[in-house]
Length: 124
Image (cartoon, rainbow, N blue to C red):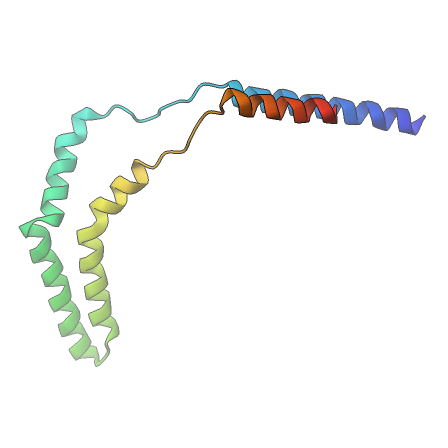
C-alpha cells in the first residue's frame, strides 16, 4: 500500500512541476522601467559632468589628495585610493548603463517547447 501512495505522490509532484514549467514558458515578458524619459536629460547632464571636463578635474583632485595623503601618512594606500576613486568616478556612467541595459532571452522556440513536453510526458 505504501508503494501505491508513493506512486500517487510522485505523480502529483510531477504534474505540479509540469504545470509550473508550463506557466513559466507561457508567461509574457514584462519590461519594468522601460519608461523614464523625463530623467534622460538629468542622466545626460550627470554623464557629461563625470566624463567631461568637470569629471576630469574632480578625478585629478582625488588623485592629488591621494598623493598628499600618501605623503602625509607615508603610505601608498591613500595614493591608490585616490587613483581608484578617480577611475571609479569616470567609469560610473558606463557601469550603470551596462547594468541597467542588461537583458536575458525570454522565450523558447516551438521546437524547444516540444522537446520539453516530450521529456515531461516520458517522465509522467
